[in-house]
Length: 291
Ligand code: CP
Ligand code: NVA
Image (cartoon, rainbow, N blue to C red; front, side):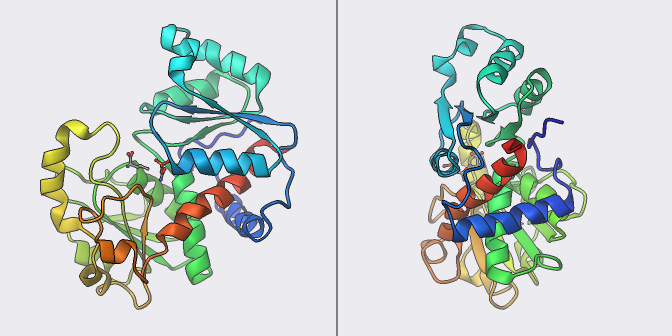
């Protein structure tokens, strides 16, 4: 059966733990797997990306595969060719396709109409590959995940949603603190609050993301006003568990959602987290694509 990775819910708990274990092995020996030997993986970017493009392109090459970066403006999609027909053509040439776009429905349609694995490289609703790297970073910092706690502080966006969904599968407690109007909808297992201090109490990871996501630029001023009390700084980290670390999916806006001191200081694992995108995604690709 063709496997997809659209929201993260496609993975069972044992599969998720196996992906994280495998990612640690691949991190220790990055050129040890040729799981994508002679395979082509299409990567469609309808929105900008630094980390996702770099980590997928480098990771697929390390696995012996060929990454094909596709921009919609260069495809017949931009001239009205249907997603259905695009899915059929992709399925004849490549072994998997990753997509970064706005609507989740586009990925669902590609998955439904094609015969190859489809994986989500960020939509307005979800960013599950990011959540894999986040959990991998937590594994490195704290060992076993069960019983650990992540506090996400800020906009209840795609990154928060994926952290809540994938964190719950991993057996991690997830608390999300957001202001009125920017809340995450209820996600099974996630505690929602308005109070950042309440959210970070006992947390091993304190996490944030940008206040203005791609596509939210029209409401940037209102977002900055509402989210200012949700900045991650050293004082907020002091309310978390001893030894807690700060995470951020990046790109960051130092001085907005996170202080310079935290972003570049000793209490973060943010730059390791960015590297972990590659290792986690390689393990995911082995699961989705390798025979
Ligand atoms: N975190 C993340 O997805 O970064 P990019 O937007 O640079 O890919
Ligand atoms: N929430 C952000 C994440 C960027 C990696 C966005 O969607 O723009």
